[in-house]
Image (cartoon, rainbow, N blue to C red; front, side):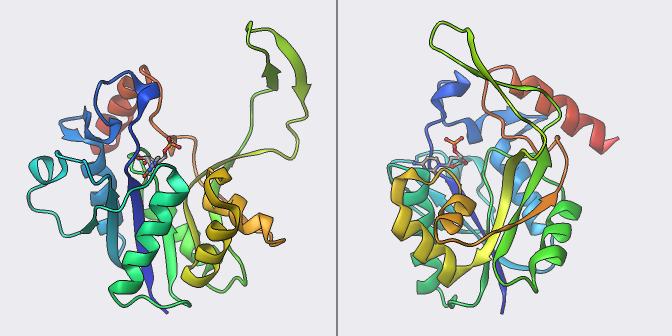
Length: 227
Ligand code: C5P
């Protein structure tokens, strides 16, 4: 079986306040998605990467004129729809049920090849698959609309789910079709089938650039790994 990467990049990124889909915001001199795709291209075991764009996207070819990744304009209303569209495209291009698909957020542009290798090493012989994640260090609070704490959540067994999330194509497709738009990641859809994905520790630096002040933090981290 082969390893494919699938990058959903069809979101509008409204939390970022950037006024454009956040994957096109330049960080350390290159659009965020260029960093993401360069890292995936630096993992030799990944046979090919497929980027899922919105049908209305008018920036990708301009910002990445020479890109080796496959591109499919099949993004949907939810992340799960975009991933399902991408999985169908991978099938059209020859991927099979037993091939592994590593779904990775375009907005996690600080991904490093060694974390992808660690995920593949930990999961390639696993019956279910797994995801990069980070144990929660902070005390967790639930809050109400007025910004007041409603309850403190026990952090002891909690992890923050990251991406890539790695499952066999046939399994993740069946899982997402069953759970639909309610799935904010692939693992939760697989869990809903009664399976337990493996948690593979990565780094807090593999965060999803989401909020306005995340861009500066990501730029500092990218600049510091290059020196
Ligand atoms: O919105 P969120 O931060 O969860 O998005 C995670 C990733 O999923 C982003 O890379 C975003 O572009 C992608 N996405 C998508 N299609 C959607 C919503 C989000 O491809 N409808």
